[in-house]
Length: 125
Image (cartoon, rainbow, N blue to C red):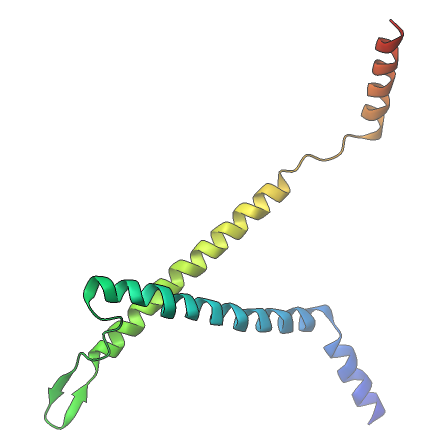
């Protein structure tokens, strides 16, 4: 039993499992932020334009069945909005990463030494 526990502990402590756990937690937090953005900002704007913040009340009655196509339209609109927000977040992250990659590297040691010699010679003249 001890060996099984040690193997499980080694598995859990690998970097991939920890990174997956962090990604899962951050994904859940990001989902709540995006849902709040859609619910509290975008849907009221849609409501101001269209007259209703959602299309849930749109239905078709066929016999005894009620087809809630408005709920489908609302879900589809939310999907497009969420996709656009996630796309904007990824683009912003990529731009941030690109700027971080473009930071100039420190000059090589021999270049620094040559610059010091140049400056020293200029100060003597």
